[in-house]
Amino acid sequence: MKEDFLHFLWKHLLFDKQHPVITSGEKIEVVNPGQHNTDAGPDFFNAKVRIGETLWAGNVEIHLRASDWKRHAHQHNEAYNNIILHVVLENDDVIVRDNGQAIPTFVMTYDPALEERYEALLAAPPPTPCAPHVRHIRPIDMVHLLSRLLVERLELKSANIRQALALTHNEWNAAFHQLLFRAFGFGINTVAFELLAKNTPYKIIGKHRNVLLQLEALLFGQAGLLQEPAKDEYHSLLQKEYCFLREKFQLSPLEAHLWKFLRLRPSNFPTIRLAQLAQFLHRAPPVVHLMEAWNKHSEKELYALFDLQASEYWETHYVFGRPSPPQPKKLGQASIYNLIVNLAIPYLFTYAQYHHYDNLRENALELLEKFPPEQNHIIRQWQQVGIKADSAFHSQALIQLQTAYCDKKRCLYCPVGAGIIFPLSSFHQSNG
Image (cartoon, rainbow, N blue to C red; front, side, top):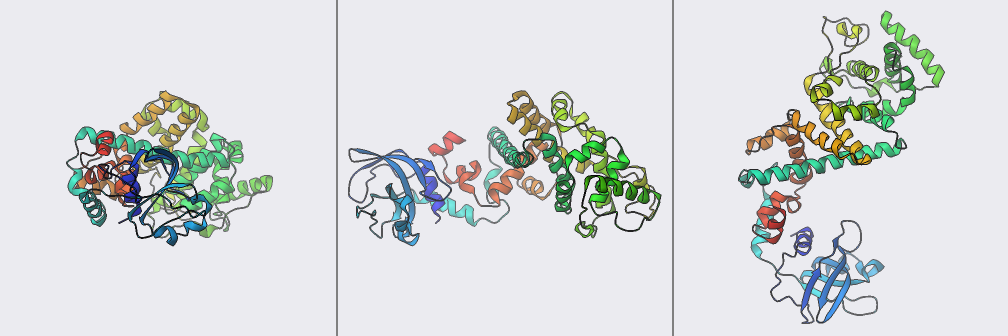
């Protein structure tokens, strides 16, 4: 048994309310269970309970056993002196305040079947504990669930974007610069690209974005990939350009060993990704202008923005000085969708929220419906239990369901899990 289960019962008033009394024998009525506190301190703030004829307002603490109060050392914490009610499953000790007054204790009872279903979900094998049940969800309920999960995921990404904004003093272009670089790491080189963004100020890039060679020199130089002796004319040109820029702006390059080439397909080498990133920075206008454009343009034009190809030199190279058979180094379709779904649209959503542009916010959600679903192990897992993702809207929602609920066994807080544990309950009816 976990205290989370008792918290949920208390929060949604799902315990036995037929003849509730506290240990003193007085009747108790829960007027308001209070605000659930997931941080340090009492479990519920600002609750209201009627004990006998008296209405009490204050905080509530919940334990499996009354003796857990002392086990958790609450008697030494002043934050627990204003507890109006101690809720327990087993009353094995008398708990008093500092002044010696006993704290009213309510022994909670409930239908044992609720706990049995809860424990069954916790014990179910990963990755989808509710697999036997989820395929029976009504389509309309699944639509509501996925919509809620999508917004939840976008809110989570918005929080990360707002952090980047705070670090750049609410400069939208500079914040996008940080996130764009990180996204171009595509997992294995994410940290190196993030360090490159921090090491290469947006203002400097902005001053040289109109000249592609200078932009490439800046990126490759700051990445620490221009330290070796020149291997060909292009390599030499980049070194000369970077030498000038480094002196002009007092720049310091990263260490070359930060970049990972091993076990990567050549088309994913950081050299190719840097050249493609240079093309984006060279072609695209500042992101603030893009926000308005994305509100007016179609998904095809958004796709075209990320349809990038590295410059001519890289058609016959994957690294400096080693010719390879001619092959245009275009950003793959899956990578383009990745950047749109995980960077561009969340940024648009956050920008719209920040400025209270409701139409722009709705457009961000609609755009996700126009792009295909991501193809990864999470989406394949849901497909195996009968839940198919028809668009990026659906795949993002299912990723949120898996990572925020299933993987963490947070079945109580998932509408699917709660509906299984508490069928036909007031909670299920109000949230179904």
